[in-house]
Length: 555
Image (cartoon, rainbow, N blue to C red; front, side):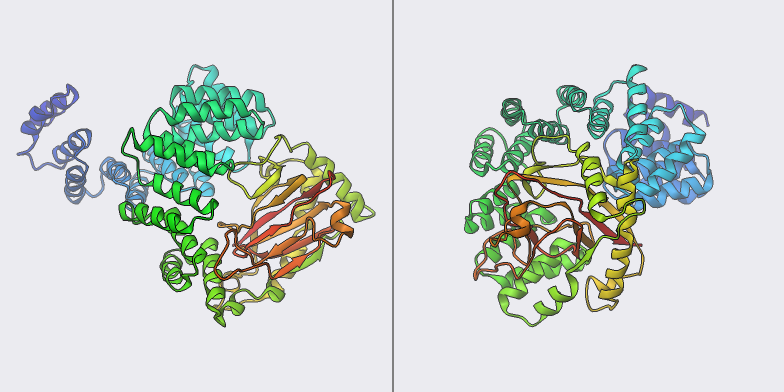
């Protein structure tokens, strides 16, 4: 044990070579465990993993060893092994706070919010003052829509002197959800200045964009493009999303002359070429990205798009089949499959995209307390208006010429909004009963007869506002509920403001125009599979078109 103590002392002093010499000849699991930690600190992660496996085999009931197995697996990107190890550590010592923190971080990174919430609730009982526990719990609360709770914790941490960039960043996000946009910009800008990263850049740029702070937006992207490769690629992507594909390509070109860029640069270029209807160059850029990063899902989507734009539906379908096998419920892959089948003239297309069966309209039941649905819609319109905080659309969403609420409506404690969430239950259940079950179709296969709302928001369009054709990648059943509709939409003959189905957001060979149109009216709820391409025709007058869409997923 003296040799182990000496090895530990040498490790703590930073003398890895001496620590190894002290420990290598000792077969005790504690010595092997310590050697693993030394290799981890030295960056030799595979060696550390092998040593931890030896230590665990020799001492299978040691929770510390299991916890460190989880930590090393996380560093190696093996989240499945990390989860197994953290669970093992917590089985051995249920109150093991450090293992709980590691597992909580994993759950956050994997966006398993409900599990993370339960984990941090437990950790908050065990170690309520630990900063990682408070920060993690507040992060989960924010993602689950409890913005007030999250903002309070982040603000308290900052007041106590814990003003690290990640805390300022999350505080800014919470403030934005609470309609304190000026304060949010201060925090987001501080977080970016302290620790520039693609995420902090994107969040700050998006907020400036939605506030129509165009000068600051442009200055931010210009500065970011000259800082480092990852920021330059993110700046180019944001430029493209703002409707400027040519400047985005110029930013990538300039960055390429300074640095070796990550494969994502080719993926961003591919999408910019798609925006410019240059399918051949889009295909070339997407293939270049995939050659360097075969698992890049975004580049795979761009390659499929470029192939469909050129009429190469057969090859596109081969790539789609690969992605459908990997992600059978990925709604965007189903949408690409539908377009490829349509271009090929396959009979399977009509079975997959049965618009008469799967696109259904309902009149919202009038919530209790209101004599007429029109009265409720007026109240809902007023309630939603308080949450339309921004001047223009988010960068990464489908709407153009309008605004979107930044907060999930299901998390807002407003009696009118709660009444809306309750009112949609009946139509959703009627829809599930109508479409039925059956393993042969990606919609009906998942129909359990029950659901949860996976997100609900509001969109306000005006001027020449419209929705670009899109799908909802994480949904199952999607929707459009019409709160207010312009006169031109209600009475006009040019389909202004109408919702359309079946047309992808890119030109194909041959063309694939919309196959179904629905004229909106206030009080109408349209339900459809999340994989269906859908968008709207622009409105022209200055009256408002306000909707409250949502996604539902099976439980």
